[in-house]
Length: 232
Image (tube, rainbow, N blue to C red; front, side, top):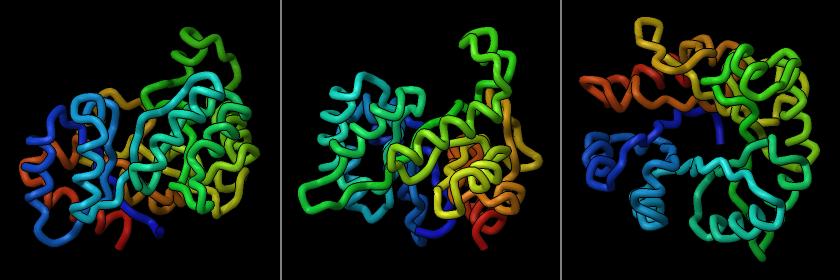
């Protein structure tokens, strides 16, 4: 899969999702299904969106003991998503167990990526709330290195860190970057942000964009703008 825009389906019901997706009569956007939607609608929403022809990033951020994560990933492997994820903070062993659970009997599996630090976390929050005193960029690189060691395909990171992740882990190691906003848009609760064009220049492989598209007056036009700035 090449560079792409992933649209975050931050809705609470299937009705809202289908109403949104029905606006796209041409392209079939790559979409992200997060906790809100998955907890509201369950696996059925994943299967239906996949049947409609969309690629899916299932963003559930698993983080538990290795055996629990392995069993959960074995369930998710049956949903035919394209990407799923977990928290890198769960240790290398947990990530290795996740790979084991996600891999099907025929050897295939979705791409698996690890969340390093959430883009809503800044240095102050990391130090005061998490008691992690190292610079946030160093923490992200360490988590990315652990993910690569565990056999994962890439990480979720701020676009500000994508270039460094590639330098640390290689160009083939994927960077999936939320925290992307238009230059003339509201950054909301994000702390470490970048525009689609800037994310392209520093080497992000995928950008995840939610409210700038889903809350736009014309979501299709906003999506197409993102594609022009990041992909084309």
